[in-house]
Image (cartoon, rainbow, N blue to C red; front, side, top):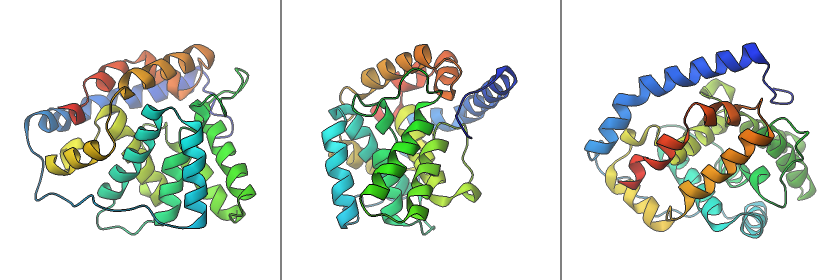
Length: 238
């Protein structure tokens, strides 16, 4: 994924995959609306990894994101942590990627209209930022890779466990994907810690802008396919 720009054939393939994913995910979404989810609640009283890098990235995020988008990034991290049960991601890398995954939607780091994809641009912003903060180039590359991929319909774990979990957490927070995999009590705890107030409207505004400015991007295809519906009817808000 060099630029993130989709040609006609790629847009058709991407749209077909997105529609198939929406249809195949309907039973899970309905279950999330109607049930309390599986098993006992997973405790969400956890703190992010405390390193010099995570502190610096959090300060950057707080200074750059509007409140609804900052909350989305922090919830994305907690959803990713909850969905990571049974796996062992790099906790710092996952946290950093979650915090920075929408950085290119902010006024400070928004790309010009000539850039094809905000997610690819956001990955590059993350790469240069992390390198400037002293991260190893290979680490910055992994974060950039995860961020660039997060607008895909699917990100298998073999493309990177942290990329897979970032994608899962972000899509859960936006569209409710895999909400049925989590206990309702755990969902309430996350949403209580980082409320979703204003997020659907904020994100819809940003995606509408992306669709207009970058019509050949994944975001534009997803918006035209009706992203606003799951965004405004997310089972997380039940």
